[in-house]
Image (cartoon, rainbow, N blue to C red; front, side):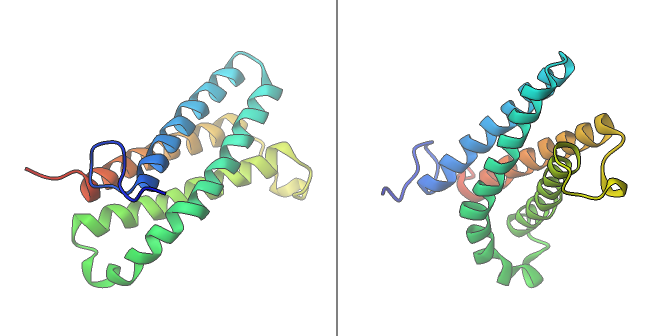
Length: 151
């Protein structure tokens, strides 16, 4: 497997793949929202569920190992943008992913007891989608800070 990326930055290839995959997931989440808006709720549910689970795999396979290398440097380096961006991206990304998984369970299954299920679907789904896009932008900023040479 190649060690250098293909986007013309100093990123390893896995960071380039992750970046493009996350951008595709973001577009897919917007497409899924449009499906719900057009009344195609079953297709919307399948689309969003698949994307939330795909995102979970990307987090576990690529982002957690990468963040694990940064974690020991956080206490002393949190004031540096290099570490602060990564920490903010990881924290908010974790919340967004957990929110997506909660919606998946609460709206799409009967696994959770009735009192834990969602009643205001639009509010929660739109909120998590907005948070997810903020996290995506933080991910782009992290990628740029880590791998794009500054002049």
